[in-house]
Amino acid sequence: MNVLSSIKNKFMRVPPDYEQLSARLGTFAPFDAARARIFRYRKQYGVNLGSMFCLEPWIATIIYDEYAEHNPEAEGDLVECMGQCSAEKMQAHWDTWLQRADFEHMASMGINAVRLPVGYWILGHGFAAEKYHSHAKTYNRALYY
Image 1 (tube, rainbow, N blue to C red):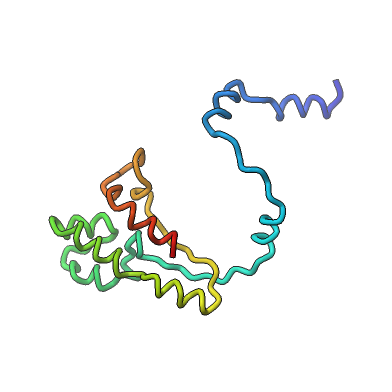
Image 2 (tube, rainbow, N blue to C red; image 1 turned 45 degrees about the vertical axis):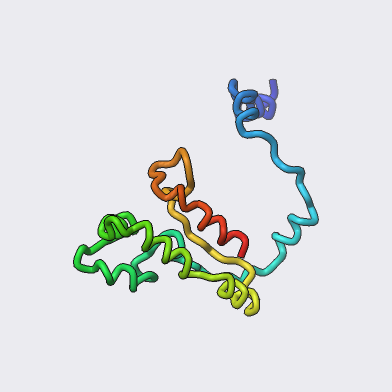
């Protein structure tokens, strides 16, 4: 056995659970070279739209200032401080923080990419804390702007 064959056999083995893993992952869409070139060569002009879905104290200061006496460090602390009215206040924030007009204005300025941070806790069923799952329509709305 030559050296290349031994390396290939050592590092290129098919894992024993390959069939199960492949069935779970499904298949990838066919590679589209034309579409890949568009994303490879286009210039990205973007902005960070923080505090839409993951409240950050240095961006959403007006919300944090209202509860400053409790010294909330993160969104979870803030929601705890809000108590019973947290769902209504968060929904009001999501409904007003960014609007379709904001995205249209950014597009008119040549912005073609946005960073929209989301917390792991809003990803839906099966993740660590699912208390925001009922508001998923709010997150999905931003995808269509």
